[in-house]
Amino acid sequence: MKIQNKNGSEILIGNVVYIVIVILFFATMFGFVIKQSSNVHSYEEINAKKIALVIDSLNQGSEAVIDVQDALKVNQGISEPISINGNSVVVKLSQRTSYSYSFFNANKVELNINEGYITIRVK
Amino acid sequence: MNFLNKKGGEQVMSIYWFVIFGIITIAVVSGVYVFSSKPIDIRAAETNVLEDKIITCIVNNGEVSEKWKEINGGNDLEKICLLNLGDLNYKEMQYYIEIEIGDKSISYGDSSFKAFCGAKKSRNNIPYCREKKIMVLENDKFVLLNLIVSIRKVEQNAV
Image 1 (tube, rainbow over the protein chains, first blue to last red):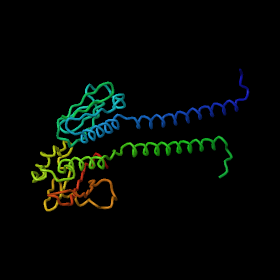
Image 2 (cartoon, helix red, strand yellow):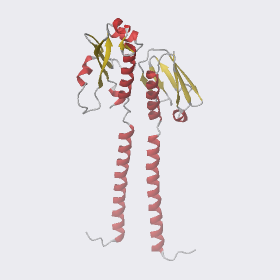
Image 3 (tube, chains in turn yellow, cyan):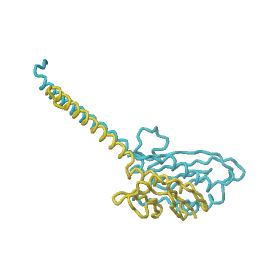
Image 4 (cartoon, each protein chain N blue to C red):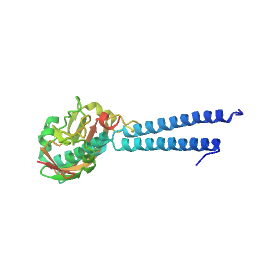
């Protein structure tokens, strides 16, 4: 097909380039917002605080099961993503980041992760 | 301003578009960062659990328990009520607890947090404090149990 009207083709190309730039821009913005809303650090903070609160509220000899599938989905190959250090819950989902939050329950606490669920036992 | 040269006008418009894109980018990025960098404040829930733990420890079926008589200071409170109020994330004490039943009262932790109790909540980056008053039985008489629990942990909850 031979384009005889040069001016028309220039307008068409210009508009296509403009639309592509706008789509790319908004796709980048959307991707950024999605990435920020699901970043590893926020999962670490949410889960550390959630587990610490549950440990605090448990009495001696009781146990609780918490769903931590969301955190384990974003785990970047850490072998022990959720652990106890002293009286702090440590959630580490990547090599560069980790988050710890303390609990005040002085009883011995045991964690066991199984298929996306964590069992907390207070002994 | 009258644009006689249409092409020149389009170029001027494209600069405006880039400026608009720039403004949108700054707005979205700063908005997302402000929202996502704000920590989740769980101190109210933590205070609630700590209050429950202390009351369950020193009050049994509405009556002041024997444990209360054994508590003469903060260290006794930790030992008898099975609490560990130390925090590896901070050098300073992050809690303040004050218990008053009748004539006896004990306090433990950083007493400077008490100044924030009952204050109108104008800022988040101050210790969270709550006061609880309940009536309990002591030697068959009703006495007031006044419990103040304050938690700092500002850096992790309210920056």
